[in-house]
Image 1 (tube, one colour):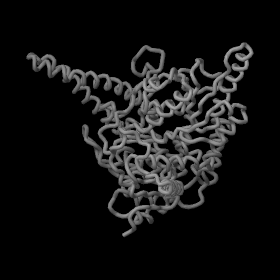
Image 2: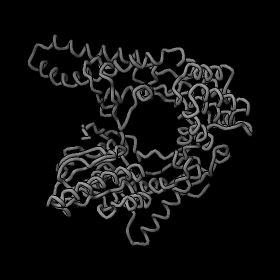
Image 3: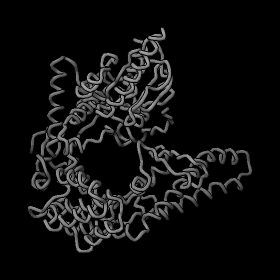
Image 4: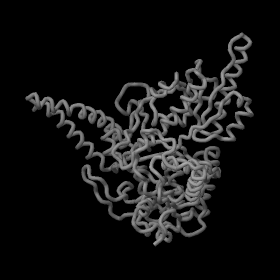
Length: 555
């Protein structure tokens, strides 16, 4: 399938860190990889992208840039025959067995076609080039060898670790919770450490690295070892292999490494900001959302792609607002746009007309963006006004205040199962109760299992329940809950939430979850406080893993 591409890259402006340097470094890696193939093969390129990489790579390089460096056409990786064309085949894939298997199928099909071509006196099939992102995988290479196609592919790696999703977010775009905590595959930790070294190439060594958790500590050790290895090779660990445009960056003073398991409460809660609800209802991927045309009042039959990042000035203003505050804000913005258009009636002189025309482009852009967000908000309101949504929010709030499921919370969970709510939604609520209460009593856990199997079927839930037990999200209670102590020590639940007026920015993190302050953000606040990290050890003891620091010695 041919991969369509739009720009839609965030501007990466207006923040203290220049993430544009990170994007430029990633773009440089992609372009030099393509140029190396063109130089070696002397032909154009048929570029085949792993579907897991199409979005992230689109964040750092535009289609026009690929074409300017030898790419004739871009395809998504699919299991089947290779894409049509005569250019040299170049694959960019994640080091996953499923992706390697799809490459093997394509190359095997290409070999079969080549055999027929040789019999007809035509040239035989060319070799292909395979880039693993970000590292080569022995298991994947072994799979290619067993499939009999390893001799036809030049295997390389493109060390793309970080992708700038927005002006304040860098991501590896590599889901690794399952690998780390269910499969026991810790290879992702190397990528995290390598990404930190890449940042240090741009921003100089980070003087203070602090963290909590076993995986976080392992990453810190890997960073130290990589620095020592660079030093032993007489290679400075800073600004190595960075493109010219990425060399003038501000320094990073401190870094916090935090295991996901230290805060499993926050991702299990229902997000109440506008951006969070857009993601819950429509799904945001790589700064874009794919919408049914009917949502926007359009008559098209194809999904409509819309950009959702800080490049949209209106979205940047409203994305973090609690959805309950959004209606008055959109009405005010609509009034402001209407007043802006009305200024045309008061523009009589040449200078007044000139001033209005200068504003017109911005007005039209705001109008278009406002129209989209009003349509999205209307659809979200149908979701948030439902009785079951309010019952779920009440159950979550009570669980936060009472360290686990209350009578009403259990009733909300049973009701969700009884009406066949999406299994993922039901399991999130059950896992929230389990995490906050340190598990379920044995009889209640058994009853929950029976209800889930009866409603959704054994095949749908058996493996999922087993996995949730293994990672500790659903378990039998074996000790008292540590949540009350954490809630008090970190001040996680507020009785009163400060109201935000107009475009005023929230000052308390509890605003975003209507009373709950995300645990991980409290830890970040502690990290940047003047008090030394070691003084937080007692308060954070209930969280899994060690507390560590690699900076100034304790006072």
